[in-house]
Image (cartoon, rainbow, N blue to C red; front, side, top):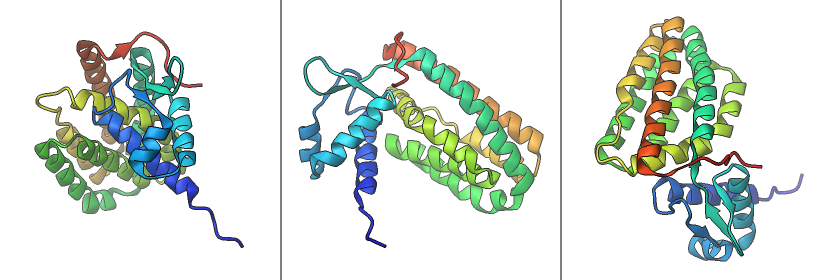
Length: 229
């Protein structure tokens, strides 16, 4: 067998770096992104940047700019609502299956994730708050033992991360969701599948209402469909 090309991993890293700039509020909706400039700032060739930008464009995070390059797309309220509606169903399922299959593991390993999340909120670091939130939810996906859950959710997390970043960077007191996370974890650890599913769905739907309200208040929402190609 030949040695594999490490290029895909580099594309992943570039994708993550650009998304963090957007989620952290350093690249606002309407900001122009030039491929050559990104490559220079990240110290990489243009090829992985081109692939990462194409992926972000297909995911609806970027759109074509007049003339040259790409722009950070505004967030579309309907797209955000539809995305969270889908997440609520999948998250509920993941919580139910986690409670049915891995209550003991949830009790043993979950509290550390709760502590990390609360620490990130206390520090006020937007990217760390998003990372801690993602880590908690991915932990539940793993406990569900359903590989399709993580695969389905991967399609939504790029835009979820962006929505979270847009709201968190405009909040004087970032919304602390870790009480809800702890309640979800407690239900899973107790093996209460029905309660875990209800809390999982409720958590996502409440997040949707909060996020959309803040997007509208901050004037960063868009009425056009930005759901990608």
